[in-house]
Image 1 (cartoon, rainbow, N blue to C red):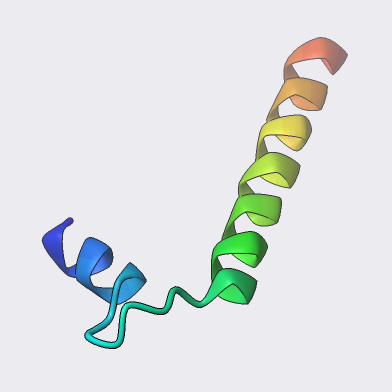
Image 2 (image 1 turned 30 degrees about the vertical axis):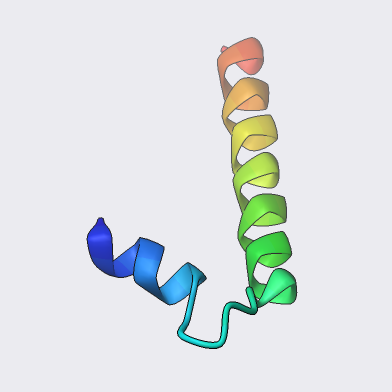
Amino acid sequence: MHGIIESLSPENGQIDWKWVGSVFVFYVVLMIGAAGVVIAH
């Protein structure tokens, strides 16, 4: 977990927002898909 936090905040202090955004979008799509499976059953 500590490595993930370090990778999100490198030495230069800049966060790769494109990477963070893509992970967030992936998480949202995953949750919507999971909800769809639950509703479908």
